Amino acid sequence: VSHILASKIPEPVRVYIDDTNIKGPKSRGKLPDGTYQMDPDHPGCRPITYGLIFSEGHLQDVHETFHLVGEAGGTFSAKKTFICVPEVETLGSKCTYEGRFPDDSTVQKIRDWPTPTSVTEVRGFLGVCG
Image (cartoon, helix red, strand yellow):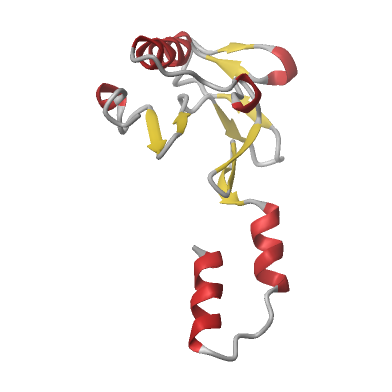
């Protein structure tokens, strides 16, 4: 996949083995009262359902990425494809407008991990921590 999408890496496409993430532009900013406002630096962004926004440039990136993979004979799983969502879990992380955070199941595994008593157990714990 990295070879197929080489012209789009590292921005806006990120590839990890067979997972592909397409990052859109910063489209809103957090106000002091905790609400969000559309970013004035991206006037081409348009509001859509649930207050999400998209830009024509991002839609073009998505289209080109799908096209490149399709031309190479690849496919995307519709079940695993998320477009214009406020939050997505990918590669053990939860990605939101506020940033990238460890997903809840990973955090819970770390909290529930028993205290290591051997080097092998420490290595196992460090593997879970990433």
